[in-house]
Length: 185
Image (cartoon, rainbow, N blue to C red; front, side, top):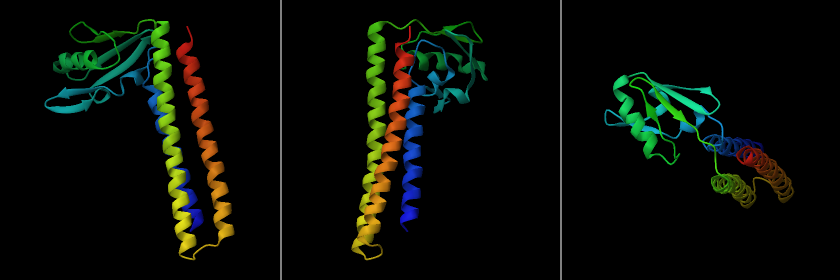
């Protein structure tokens, strides 16, 4: 029973770390990356559709993204969705392709992005700690029901703390890497 709880906690903590890494990929650094547009949803025939399902997104140059819609009639909607997003990018449209130049980041914008990334990391740490809290709660329930002893509970709590520390460390390392990437000129 304890092994199953630990397995579930590990899986949930891994998902939290992976979610934080995915969120980090959507934060714009100085480089063009198709992952920047992962959060963009386009109004396509009355449906909110992810941009990556409507077009091919590529980075032909380090500071340029090109968006080739599968349906040319969706070009205007894609352009509008990018302009209304929080990316702060201005698309240029040549009738069949959208070019999205990625400007150099200012020092002020870099610091703002670092704050955003730190908040994302903190949210990830909180999610990991919540998994640990749930695990501890389930362990106490098992002790109260008499299914496991206090010694086994104590060992499981120590293992849960080590697991939590490992996952928080993974988030911190990803944060450190992302901060260095953002501050790189």
